[in-house]
Amino acid sequence: EMNNYIIIKVKDNGIGIPEDKQRTIFDRFIQVDKSTSRGREGSGIGLSLVKSLVEMHNGIIDVISELGKGSEFIIELPDVTVKSDQECANYSSSNLVDKTEVVRIEFSDIYTMEYK
Image (cartoon, rainbow, N blue to C red; front, side, top):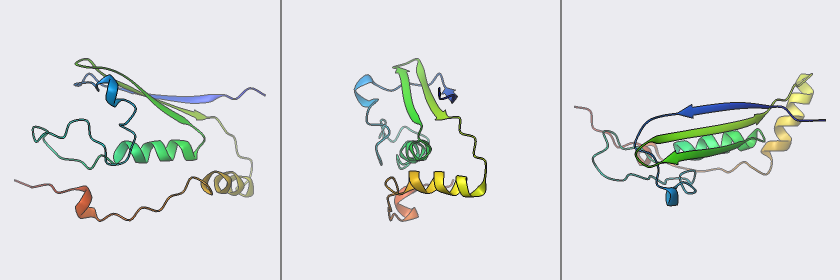
């Protein structure tokens, strides 16, 4: 039986991501641009959370980026039809068992923004 996939693509025409950083952007707390020139400071946790959610659904996420021209993020999720609540519960729990990780972080660690 051939698996069908749902593909989600998100593309921008921003600053792009250097080739040597493209493998690390999905790691937790990694930021490509740590300079204060950014309007808002984030934590670098966003893409890590996205990757975790995608993988919990047996999907994959990848990026294609060219410096100065922008980035494209591609998510592939298996198209799964679940016939009953029980089947849904079984599917979910089997994927979550080995992929769940508890991380304790303070909100103050994530966002230290100033409002002007």
